[in-house]
Length: 157
Image (cartoon, rainbow, N blue to C red):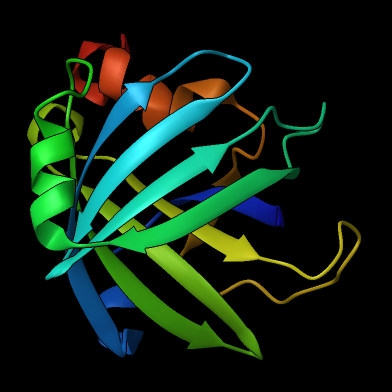
């Protein structure tokens, strides 16, 4: 239940050529407290309820619990979410024994593309595809819960 991941900005759309799957995701947050977030996600024709805890100081690890729920329940719970729905397409790319999940955002976060890679341990070494850019692991402004409140379009260049 401990999620270990690193996040990166994406510098080109070359990942789309390598993606073996893509799925539209809509998600809202029932709670965006800094101690815990509670997320509702519509992923294709599936629904999920997720609870995440506080990240470690370096941002690589945190508690995560996720449960699949019916799409009907997920849609109903979305009506209770805080303002600011996340709309994105997730591309799944296998690269050198790792799965990179690349999120291309739309709506108020259009123009932002973030890649995440889940790891088995914090110091795990992995190769980065050529389209991976700056690491943003631990930078709270790139957390989906934060993007729902302070969308990318509101950032100053």
